[in-house]
Length: 267
Image 1 (cartoon, one colour):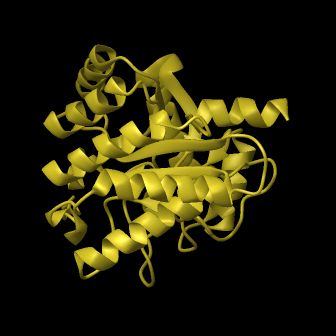
Image 2 (cartoon, helix red, strand yellow):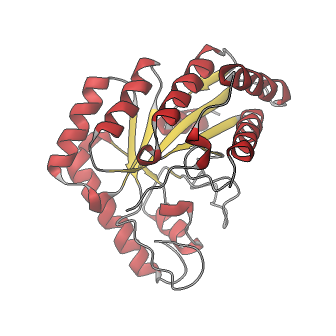
């Protein structure tokens, strides 16, 4: 799979830490509901160990921050999992390993890419979901957590029905995804995109990114999507600055999917 670097990562803006501080503070002020704002990070397309992956986990470990890792089952082998697990243990933080589709393959002839979209029957969808889960359970054991992130953040109603039928704890897509999931299948959706941005100019990209972050914090749940394969030096530097700011704010709580599930069951 080819990964491009977004234009915003050509260089970081001047006084970026101050801009992020103001953005976070404004989001906290705009929040209407009581309680802390939950923030989670979701890293997609996980399966292949390497320097980018190691660096990502080291940064999260440095700030004692949890990270939800969306693993593509068909890409994962036992040697790869052993290498990923060694990196994770050496980094030492809270990792929530969950399912990212099955093969990360598009099956739609027209329209936007989907692995679990309308072109396929419910039986086909259930087969692939089950194959992916079984593979991850066999390789990851008790480290696997049953949340499903569909590739490209898209799936149709049949797929949602399959996930609920198979007892998944939640589905994680992007903000405003349709169709909506039911109460029996909560949506842990991302609403801030760091690395798959499409803006033509860095200035527009930075303006939109900071707006996304502020609105997400104001909503009470901020889900930040990461693609480590698309990260360059500037992107890693930004992540360090962002985590430094977020971990200083008492109004914010960094969580993973398991934490969100526990919070929902306690309400």
